[in-house]
Image: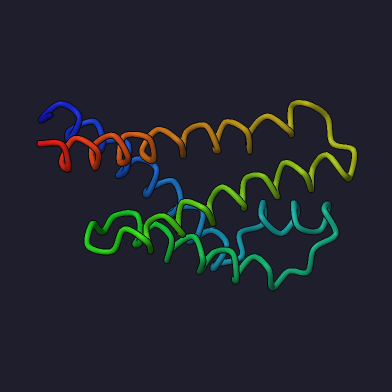
Length: 125
């Protein structure tokens, strides 16, 4: 049980840091993000909206008091990654640009699955 808790927190912190860095990049409208949004045909203000959502989502998955909020944050991240994949596919981007959102989704599932297993173990203990 202690190993599971340790791995859960390691995965959660790493994923949260990734989302915090990405969210900060969106809020500060980094050039790379602007180029991607322009390429995909989205308005520039979407960077700020998604950036704020990622920061809030990271905060939500780092807390353990409100499970429903955490669940919704994970759902939001999943929608974001699936949307990124679909957006890239619809504009005709190659496989090299389609893979990163899929990898991000897979990385997201690591802390999510560990959280669910940890919760099940806590209830069964």
